[in-house]
Structure formats: C-alpha cells, structure tokens
Length: 257
Image 1 (tube, rainbow, N blue to C red):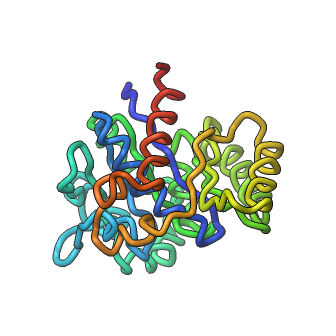
Image 2: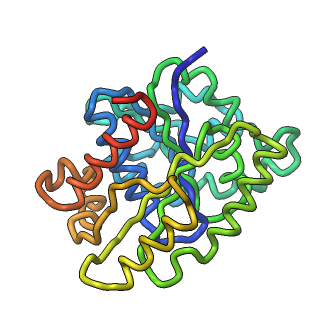
C-alpha cells in the first residue's frame, strides 16, 4: 500500500487563487524534500505554464484520460527538484463530452493515477473552476480536498454547493474523501472586511482552516508569466513566505512534527 497522499485543490468559484495555490504549494512541498506530482486537470493549463512546461507535440492529461497513453508517459519532470507535472492542454475541454458514454467515467483519473502512487509522497490535483465531470474525476481520485477561499465579501457564496457535491461524491464514488482544510487567500489585512471573512470562514469550517493565510501580493500574480513558482521568483516576498509556511503546515498535519 502506497503512503502517497492525493489532494484535490478545488473551488468551483473562479479567481480564488486555486491554481496559484496548486503551483506554489506543490513547489514548496517539493522544496522541503517530498516527491510531488501536480496534475493539471484544468483545460486552461495554467498550472502547466505556471511551472514553465509546454505541451507541444507530447502526451498530456487528455491523452491519458482518452486512453491514448499511460499516465507515466505523459508526466514531465520540471526543472524544480522533486517536482513533476502531468500537463494539460485545451484539448482536455473536449474530454467531458468524450467520457459521457463511458462506464465508470468518474473514475478514469483514479485508475490512471494508480501506477504512479508508489512514486510520489504527494499528488496535488488542480481542478477546473466548475463541478463537472473533470472535477468529479479529481475528487474520486483523491484522499482529501483543499479549498482555497478568497477573503472577500462573497467568500462563502458557492461553498454550500461545493459541500453538497462532496457529500454526493462520498456517497457514490469515494466514501473516504475528507476535507484537508481551507486556505484563506488574497487577504488585505488593512481592511476590516478581510478580517471579518477570516472569522466567518473559521466558524463555518470549525478546526479545518489552515493558520497560514495567503496575503494579496502583486508578486504572486507576476510569477506565472515567468513560469516560476513564487519561492524562486521572489523568495523574500510575503507570498513566498506564506506558501513556504503553508507547505510546512500541510506536511505537519499529515506526518506529524
């Protein structure tokens, strides 16, 4: 039995820092010596390009999900130590339609990842910002779900819908699925609103909120265009500091001190 932990990073609301969290958390966990695979399940492919990986001419997650190759053949080793990516391309957007008629269509990713679990300590899945078939595949393949929530007025809007989906997934596909935790993102500490949202989210997700809060930080939005994780793009900025802390907190939660 592999000790690999598979974590889906999921929130159907767009613009909450989901891919930013997927890229930077994966990179910082890898930097702490863990073997990490980031699965880019979003057809926009932002996690792929955010790590400086281009897909042209090779296999990608679409090839895996449609049975053209094994997952191992599509994995790319990045230039960052201990970090690999299963890349995505816009082709993946056609995957939901192609899988509709398949038996066990929600478990395609889970089956594809099975042979890889012995090779990694952590597999992170960057889910698309919707609750469609791709996201269901991600949830069916995972041990737990990490939910990034933006510190803004409508922060908890849509979270009820996500919780309902998790309930359905537990009932029908993956009874062992847990909530890994909630990460608060884009906090502007100068506003009362941001701090109010933090306390509201903590009330809603009793005991599940990571103590590390990711601040609003311009360097975090610049880093992807350079194909660099934040701790390498600007190691001293507040964003890099937050994701390093979050990586340590996640590892401690899973492995003890």
